[in-house]
Length: 198
Image (cartoon, rainbow, N blue to C red; front, side):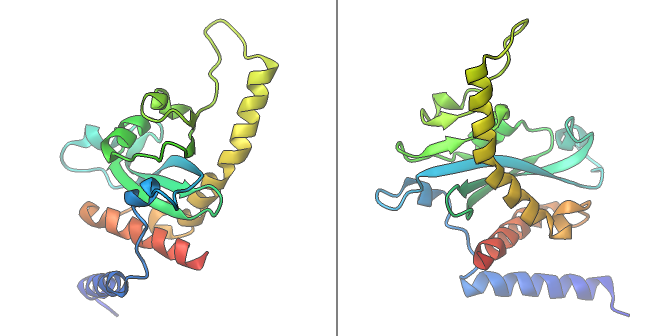
């Protein structure tokens, strides 16, 4: 018995109230470069949320990986605590590494970063980066390289669990039908609520 516009106003009021409290904000990119309190190990990954097919510029939102139109969310977490440090957002057609470069995220020189194979070339931006070894063309991985990949995957599982925790909120796991311009705000609020519950 409640109109759609009333629900929309209530949601916006709640979002504004949460932002005004100051308790639901992420540390941000600056927290990665602090001289004393920088994270020792961070993990970075991208998750996608399906959206309705846009009326304009459909190719920019089409994700070949998900075979539908999506919005991408890049998460940087503290590996030790599991807390989300900062986020970045892009359209579904944007590659994970391209989104990383656009986000202008920089790590402290002594921070180790863990990524998946979608971040080939990240060592040019941060030397202490670890990505899985790729099998060479017409070749095989050595036992040592396979062990390295296995250990890295075990370490990176933390950020996959964080992605799963955010997908508990149905607005991110199901098809996002709201205005795209407020998508980043809502993801940041959900990430801050996740941090608050830690």
